[in-house]
Amino acid sequence: MVKPDGVQRGLIGDVVSRFEGRGIKICAMKMMKIPKELAERQYEEHKGKSFYDSLIAYITSGPVVCMVLEGDNAITVCRSMMGETNPQDAPMGTIRGDFALHTSKNVVHGSDSAESAKREIELFFNDYEIQKYQRIDEPWLYEGKL
Ligand code: IDP
Ligand code: MG
Image 1 (cartoon, rainbow, N blue to C red):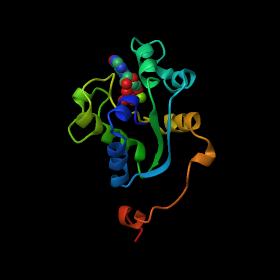
Image 2: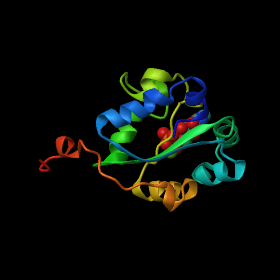
Image 3: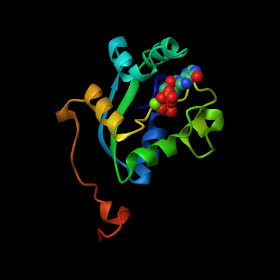
Image 4: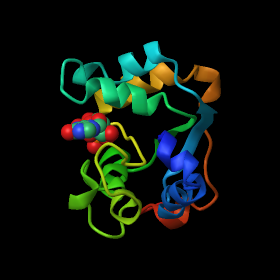
């Protein structure tokens, strides 16, 4: 997800382009303003933490772009492309390392496990919004497919 700061700062294209260029497939994509109730479900693991209220305010503060991404080891690959939660720890070349300064404005969200990906995809997308298709470059991305 490109968070509200990423959208406001004109970073949608750059973020999407990084994943696309890497070979990660975009299976779904939409812009929305997250209703508070949905934000609370997205971030239920953080309920009770000191930053929870400001996190809900941040993620509902403007439009976001949600995506379903697919690829070999996609969760680990995408999380490493995002960089650490605190952008000050994120190396240059990562999204947060290149575009952010503070944890509370860190440009992107990404599921951190297969379980959270499944849960979040079900929260944000209907089945008919998620596309199964082959990219024409898959034989040139994946071992043993030529
Ligand atoms: P992640 O986004 O890298 O998975 P999480 O620990 O799951 O990081 O935290 C979710 C989001 O909550 C972060 O991306 C960030 O926007 C916000 N957040 C986490 N820790 C803090 C904090 O200490 N202060 C302010 N915001 C925080
Ligand atoms: Mg997280």
